[in-house]
Length: 388
Ligand code: AMP
Ligand code: MG
Image 1 (cartoon, rainbow, N blue to C red):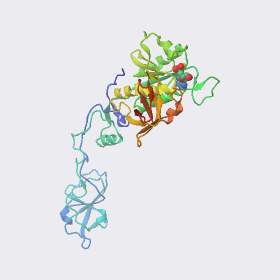
Image 2 (image 1 turned 90 degrees about the vertical axis):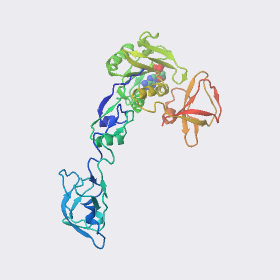
Image 3 (image 1 turned 60 degrees about the vertical axis):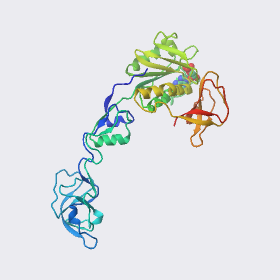
Image 4 (image 1 turned 90 degrees about the horizontal axis):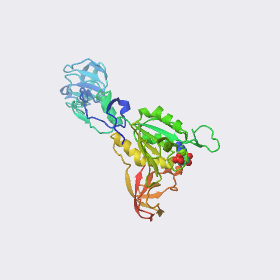
């Protein structure tokens, strides 16, 4: 239902965590040129053949080559160039003598050790040869991948962009945290929570407006923010009561592009899905636990798939239940849980009702109890969704 956005090239700093839409081929070699792996002296190896601590070889120091020196130098036989780590090795030099094996001289240098040909020289192309495919399509961009791209001189990477998600909360009882509460009001908590879940899934949040239980207000919010969205998520206003603003706005019979359904799961039974002016919309229930569990079950996988990201599903672990539990007949139940990966055990955490956010806030898993199960005894193996 959620469509992938067309691939784009983005500046490196914006590519972190996104999937590459193309292979990346190295436009140059790394190292770019032969350079010194040590602070020391560039020499011809054979000029140090006789060197020992007792009888150092003394060579005149003809040049000083710090990292970043851009003129091209040639080393004459029986001379040395003082050279720093990362500086270009002059033509004619075949080895680097580390400063520790010398007296560190600036006019002339005493070399106390023979250095073999090739010693302490990082060769051009020994890490990456130009033309090599260094990153693959579908690979998620990590800090190291960004470092490699930058080292290759790339300023941008081709990626599948973030889905752009609008998160709307509904309810006339809701006020923003940080403002005083009147009797009958509660703090609006779904938008910050769902927006964080959207971002954690790798997508981007356009806005997090709240509308009261008023169809005109809700429609105005949709009009104002909905245009740029790839996905609209609402919470609240979809259950069976009166003043169900989302249901009222779209009509309860599904003829305005949004169908309201009951899903056989707990929490998260009332749901709606459809399109508004072509944009996919999912209308989640208002209870905070229902909203977040529904996001986990339906939206996180869809968003990640649309962005080409791996781990579309949370990892599912098998774990042994430490207690006996009951579960409603005919509903797939997701219980907040504490999963102990070392012991391979899982324990439910807090009551199953959909307003107990406190327990979800400290749970590390969702216990997945199948529809047909009504009683599970201690010692049973169950699946846990690993939320860590
Ligand atoms: P509703 O689905 O609109 O009937 O809401 C179900 C329950 O969730 C009610 O107790 C609402 O007050 C509560 N609720 C709905 N939306 C939010 C929200 N954004 N933040 C906190 N609680 C909410
Ligand atoms: Mg409501």
